[in-house]
Image (cartoon, rainbow, N blue to C red; front, top):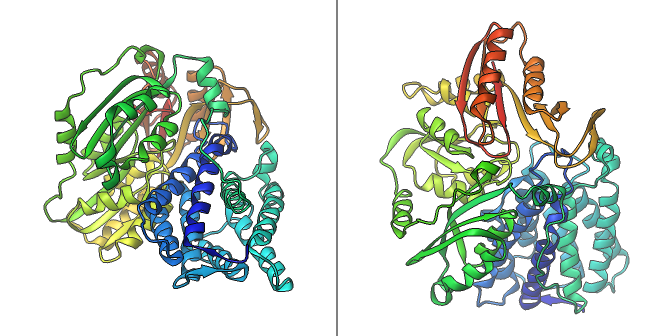
Length: 549
């Protein structure tokens, strides 16, 4: 094959998206930290699926239009750092092929090199040993091959591109010691190679079809072994134009029924609300996204005592209330948008003057479009965004760049305590510059700790970790791994509080009992001379989130 046109590019996109969807759980399992948040594969799959959905709507087979549509879909659907970088790779790809109806191997080489350049520019501090390295090295060496082999065709180019990407991927542990320590390659780079291999298989006449993906990562194995655990997954979906004509509740109910129980599916005109208890929430979202876009979603990790709490009385009126909730607010001087998971945290941020709380966090990163939708629903002269997670910052910044005509400042808050401290320092009477300075100062003086459970046996920074252990994590350092939740929390507090500490904020999650929080509160009171603030965050995944200032 000497050239590809828009129709062939569409086929490549379908095959690449299917290959990534089929492999996303394996990619999720390439998790450096043994915590239940390995979501790179899911983030990348949801990002690329969003691009695919936009391409599906096209009646035009012009290659430039297809590439532009894919780029826009990826841009708006980007989730997590890996998803944002992926969107930038194909943004550069589109910029290179813009105006072309067909491309040859030389054009493709230029397009992927351009994609690498755009992706690097999107990241303030690029890290080698990641998806960035793999796109740069594979595009460079495949491009050199085309230059030295003028008769190189499309299939030959992709063979070289995938070969070089695999070599680069296998070398990522040599560039990032943390990958080598835990014995994995980079997950984002793996996702990229999976897409490229899907492209290649299509060109070889073996397009990848969607398979029934079985969860293979350790997190889900742990959940299956302990059937009391699962995820309460709720979302509101706005049907796209095509689905409005063809959507059937029975079909979606059948698909969701294969993924979990306690299922409710109700439709009101173009909105569909779904409630399901499932071990694989990412699967449920991927199925739903075939029909349209999410208006709102919430995923909560359930504990054994909650297993029988099944909300079977969801009414269509709830959908109308949710729909009304996205109405545009009245104009004001300031508005704050924050990201949080857990009803208690949502309420707490609202108490701290946050206008819009986007549901999401460590296990479910909001997309760029989630941020732009929130921004559109706010009418303010100054908009402050608090991502509250290092893997959400890029999507927030990408949204801000899209809404460039507005005054938006994204604070690089990497944790819930940082976001709360920033909110406390916000002064509606101060100037934007004064607020930014005060809020940044507060963020920089917060130490964050978290307690969660381990999903696999491993060794990290010299600490032996067993599946099911409770780990105390200070910033990015695992300081303790033991069988007892309270013991882990006490050890974490001991590592965080010193003579300069003035206040400790303890936010407990949905799995923490009253006796357990009383035990921790008493321990702090008896051990440290420090002001203590205890809040019920009702957050999933993390038993305790601790902030020390």
